[in-house]
Length: 81
Image (cartoon, rainbow, N blue to C red; front, side, top):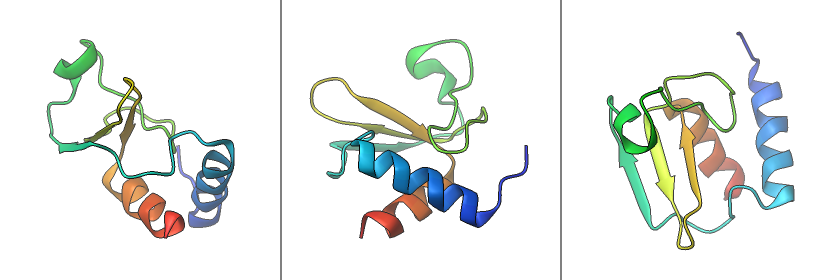
């Protein structure tokens, strides 16, 4: 699936407005090519892009987790300010 920069930006802004993921910095920000072992045997799906093989995991207090592609994470950080 190909998504434009503007579409990703709109998705991120909508997620920020909804409070998901939290607008605070995650407690743990893990980068790994083998994230599949964290929660399941399937490769995690990117919260923003919606495609599998996310390589970044963010964890917040209370058990909230989000998985992201590197480019989506960079854009999310930029939009969060």
